[in-house]
Amino acid sequence: MAIYTDDEFGAITIRKSHRSRSITLSVAPNGMLRASMPVFASTRSLKKLIADSRTQIRSMLTQHAPKVAYADGMQIGKSHSLLVTSGPNLHLKRQQLKLVLTLPPTYNLTDAAVQQLVREHTLVALRKEARHYLPRRLSTLADELGCKYERVRFSHASTRWGSCSSRGTISLNIALMQLPFELIDYVLIHELCHTKQMNHSRDFWQLVEQADPEYSAHRRTIKQYSPTI
Image (cartoon, rainbow, N blue to C red; front, side):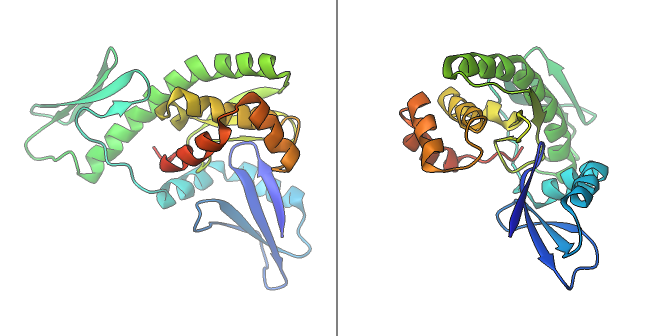
């Protein structure tokens, strides 16, 4: 079994089989992508399929992700919150740091269409917060740790909080803005350490511990959260 790491979707498990006639992508029970490939297929072919199918892959991951139930007064990221009001038409607008949802009598907050509307605006709010905070914090930590990376990019379709490619691209899930600050730092430190150790060996975890002495507790605590938006 081999692993291919994509800048956006992270580690993808590759299974080659004589029965496979083409490359197919699916979502494993753990939420990660897996690829079934003919034995003669190359990694280059997989890479091209992923590049040509990013929109479909994002949709597939979203469909398999557990659903978030949005509620009145819910905190969104570090600065935003959801406010539900009554009115004649279904509408959602941003007022300063509040996402104001107007619900007519014919709708409920739990309706799928309403939840999707809130999710779309939540993505916008979280992406704005992520772009404002995460690059600067990542740069600060990189300087402190003596780590170098090529660029940072954002995603929301992945089931991962972050990833680091062999080319030095660090991908961060905008759902990080839902985490406590100390857990955000843990994820950023984790990915920065991958710029020096592209594995989870003992040397890797020693690097993490040097930067975050509380990493064991943070590693346990982050399992209580989900990157699903």
